[in-house]
Image (cartoon, rainbow, N blue to C red; front, top):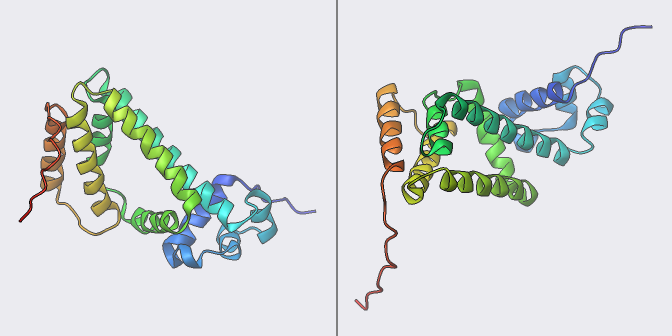
Length: 194
């Protein structure tokens, strides 16, 4: 009797990421993931009952990784104002690995196509925004800096624009500055009859 291959959730999710990067989320199949992982389709289905469950597990793992990376950065910063935002800025100093860009693009596509996955991400973003606000002495400045940071990362991760090292450092320094500013809420713009 031969040795059975050990099947881990992470190895299946790693295989799913590799398949997504190669052929896209729309073409992701349980068969392709099983082939990539070197296991049977039944083994994939034992852990993730459907393609939807597999995608949910991928998104959940990505969010947990994201949280862990940012928590580690916050621990390194220590006791600073705007801790949640500055941890995110610290992480953004390192560009995403090239091999992650197609995975990020495909995970974003999965979120767009799936309302349930979007709800998970919406809740995650709500939690992040609340941490940004509650850990900042200047919540408005920190929130605006976070919104700009997310736009910066969006362009970067989805491969719409590659920042030079100098641009990256300058923009992130300016976002850190913005987080410390007392930015007043602007009044609602008056409507013009012109």
